[in-house]
Length: 108
Length: 119
Image 1 (cartoon, chains in turn cyan, red):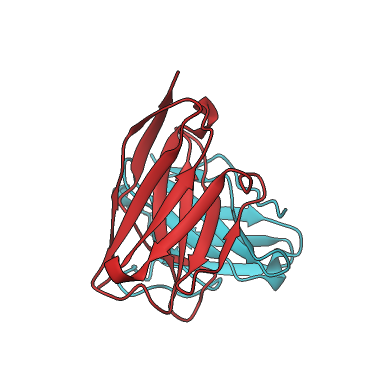
Image 2 (tube, helix red, strand yellow):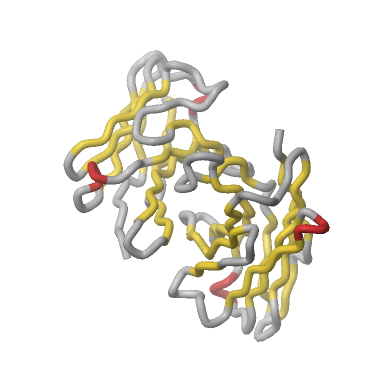
């Protein structure tokens, strides 16, 4: 089993920068993917392979991964960014997939 | 653009079997990995298991004894069965495709099905 730890909540004012962390043992050696889930909707991929954005995702979304923590950064936060965010990795040893507990982003 | 459409009952009695189907449109089920993921109300996401189009499967150890995922390439769909359900299995269940070249990610996802286990 591989444990991913996220803060339950992050709050940020509009126009500011939000940073959501995802901690895991030597997570820097794995590819981390991030999903946005708005209330009542399915998750949507916003960052893959640590730093890449799928087409259609604003440049305001970025990611990094090193050591024991990966970070999703949302610049110039907008009200529409308010959602739950989940990190996810694949463990190649077990061939199993793991998710973080999720972080609720609140835009003040 | 690939789309996933889920179907199946939203209410299952305790001790019975949960059955859901995911129909794939806009692309072929062949050549890809397909997973089921669930989310208990107000909680996080849990990977249930995957199936490769060839029929190879891999399941979450916590559910392995009760779960079965199958594929019907002729209908371009795959299915989930979870036996002996309890209240702890109440969740929104999602189907998802693994990435084209990056199989470690999930994209896209189905719309989700809330399955409630009743006593």
